[in-house]
Image (cartoon, rainbow, N blue to C red; front, side, top):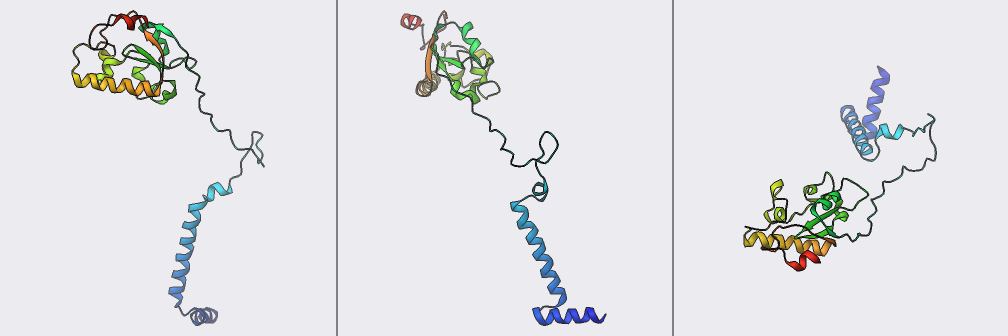
Length: 195
C-alpha cells in the first residue's frame, strides 16, 4: 500500500488535482480523443487492406473506374411521324432517342432522360402526344393525347407555357401526321399537316 499512497501523493503534488479528479479528466480526454479520431478515420476501415482477385493484399491498386455519364447524341430529324411510330421512342430502347410531342410537334427530350426515361417521374409522357395531359397537369391515361377540345383558357395557357419551355430546351425533330385530333383549340390546320 505504501507504493499506492506515494503515487497518489506525488500525483496531487505535481498536478494539483485529487486522484479522483485526475482520473476523471484522463478518462474524459480518452473519450474525446476517440470521438475526434472517429470523425476522420473509421477504425475498422483504417485496418482493412484492399484484397485483389487472387486473395492477396493489393498494393498500389488503381482507383475503381468512375461511371461515365451517358453520351448525348445529336438529335436525329425524323420528319413526319404517326402516333404509332412515335411510341417506339418511349425510352425502352436505349439506342433510340427519347421523344415526346406537344401540339403535334415532336421534341427530342433525351437530354432529360432522368425525367422522361424509364423510371423517371414523367416517363408516362415519353413516346406520346401529351398536349392534353400537360394542359390539365394530368397523369390520367385518358388525357394522354393531343385533343384540346373543351380546354379552358387557363389550361391552354398552361399548355402554351409547356410548349415554350420545350422550344427553349429541346430540339424539334419532327411533326405528328395522320391524326384528326383538335390542335390549337380547333381543327388541325393544313399547314401543320404538311410541315
